[in-house]
Picture (spheres, rainbow, N blue to C red):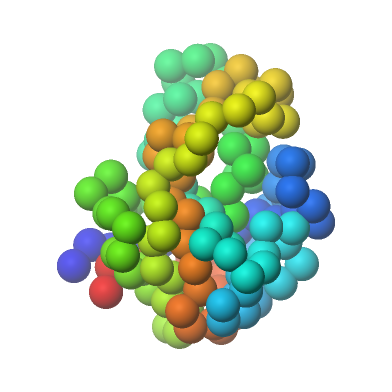
Length: 145
């Protein structure tokens, strides 16, 4: 079992926007994060990304990107996400369970690539459905189940 922590939680009211960091959030079963534009009845309810990937791209590209700047919902620190595949499950905090539905997505010109000049979600983003909801906060443990 692999373990890490929630480095940041970010939401935006609509799709196609950079997200802003919040300290805690309610995750709704089979829907997504309350008040996030990507929530809904589909396979990409919550997006996870590695904080280490953000730090690496910042260093490589001379950026200063932080939480939400790559349009991700959950930044996970100190955990290798690269081996997870569709069907993998991740627990956030005590209660929330996500199932990875896809790794990466089609790349298209987006607010992220226009703002940052580079995008991480097409290659490294974990797109997930919410199997079990609950409350999460920054610093909560993350583990594979």
